[in-house]
Image (tube, rainbow, N blue to C red; front, side, top):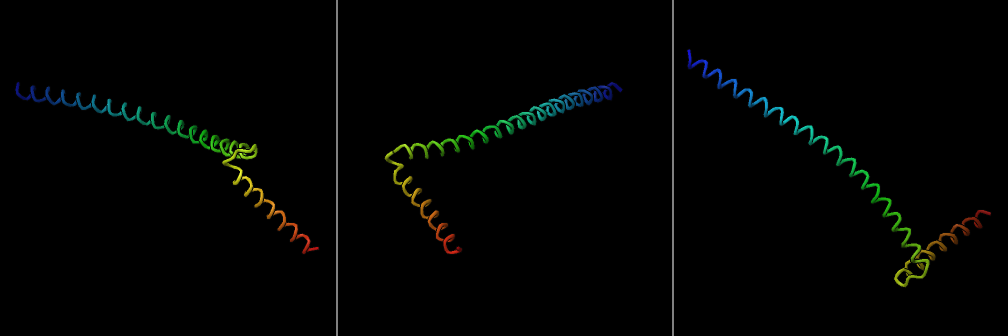
Amino acid sequence: MEENSNVIALLEEKVVNLLNQFKEARLSLEQTKQLAEDLKGENEILQNTLTSLKEENKSLKVANNLLGSKEGKTITRNKINSLIREVDSCINQLTDIY
């Protein structure tokens, strides 16, 4: 009989340990989920900032080229020439219509 009570006590101890481990695992999972949500939000903010900075960088490059940067003169000249050709093409199409 005493042997049965020892087995039951050991079994109860193991069940308590398993329940504690389960609670710790559940808490860890909840913390991990919260961390994942926080990181998703932070990632979204960083993506928006990156997009904004890329646009700003693009604008600054164009402004720098227009101000006479040596490295961008060719690029700017080609862009302006392309725009002039496009305007000329539109004018030619309009004159052909009328």
